[in-house]
Amino acid sequence: MYPRVAPSINLSRGLASQVQTTKACMQNWTSVVGLEIHAQLLTDSKLFSGSSTKFGVPLNTAVSYFDASLPGTLPVLNRKCVELGIKTAAALGCRINEMSMFDRKHYFYADLPVGYQITQQRAALANNGELIFPVIVPGKKPYYKKTRLLQLQLEQDSGKSLHDDVLKRSLVDLNRAGAPLIELVFAPDLETGEEAASLVKELILILKCLRSCSCKMEEGALRVDANISIHRNGEPLGVRTEVKNIGSVRSISQAISYEIQRQFVVVTNGDVVTNETRSWDAITRSTVAMRDKEVLQDYRFMPEPNLPPLRLNLATEGVLTNDLISVQSITNALPELPEDTRKHLMNKYQLNQDIAVILVNESKLLDYFLNIMDDMQGLPGKLVANFLINDVLTFCNKANIDVDNCQLTCVHLENILAALHTGTINLQAGRQLIELLNSDPAQNAKTLIKELNMEQIIDDATIEQFCRQAMERQDQAVKQYKNGKKKALLAIVGEVSRLSNQRANMKAVAMYLEKILKS
Image (cartoon, rainbow, N blue to C red; front, side, top):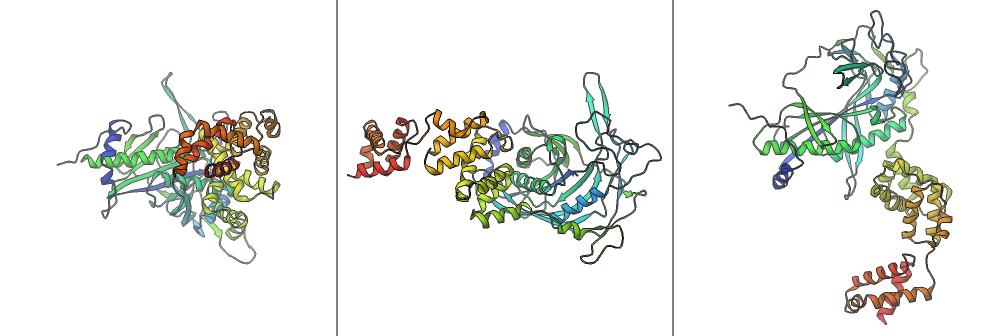
């Protein structure tokens, strides 16, 4: 009897409730996730030709004779690509190989004119690295995860097929053909979409720090494929599916989480997961079948006859006697990496690990923090970091804008922090200033404080007046407080905030209310 093959499933409606009913069973299952990531190296020219790698140039204008596969043309290896590959491998703790080889991987697509891709399948540039990275899940405490990097290899990209639905024809743009890539093959050490997204986020921070890749996923500079399977605890790994070309960090988490749930529902329904390639539809938020992998494709790998072995100098001492690239020289010049920055923040500014993780993961927040600490050395680092995370980052999340697109300047934030630190304004006014200055960056915080009458009320007589009015309006809360219900004080404090248009000093208000209510 042949097993039933699962139909295409949509988790968005009925299946979602079905997942909820089977959650009790999910604790007996384990999900397994491995990533394959392609990063375009940040060079001016391609891997084997002198054509430009600039994004957005007119179609088919960055194409050499070699890229177009004209007879008689030969590849010439770009030294800069090798150096960036070595730099990335060293930052990820890889064993960099003294000799690596190039192979031909054969497959026939219209956007691959020569009929094969030059890659490093059998003898890669580097192997056996690892990446230890923080996993950030909203509402939970960050934790660290380790994954193995099995292989890092150099390879060329293919071109791009363009489909015209109106004219019913397909065209080919070869601008990307031959663009330099590194492929990073990670072991299946992850379990969730959040872990996968956090891995990619950390890798992006590292690649940007190294200036190896722009990591602009919207331009195709970083592309992620995820291999996903589930299995019952104690049993062999299940059949995996591959989700191709996920286009953003947020989509990585969503796509993998969806696919794990989809597979779980498939097996609990008595069906079987098929070995197939799927794509992520960001509109429907579901994975969609592309093609099955039941017949293993034969890529007919063979050594690339037009490229000699790539040899590197692994010596740790001495002077070079030839033109080999020195791995030690590249390793010695590595910049401070994200995890080193986290430790530096913790040691210099006495920040805890969770705060350091968030600051480093949001590069613009980190820039804000370092600039403010340089300009306002009297402020405690924890105060500045908490303001950036609890107020600036929270504002960006609520406004649904990326922190990198935030319009606030360091001067804006320094003026707000100075006013908060001196007690000129309270935190509510500070949050209002964040919103106003982001919408109109030409404004000045000091001017807005005066024009909008945002100064904090600290006068004792005025505060007493507001407190007595609030007690009259919240007489029930007053009785509850006097009967021992201490939380009732919050209702009275809230009433003072409303009466004072959120300008009263809440610390002084709370102290005065406790004093008068106990008398």
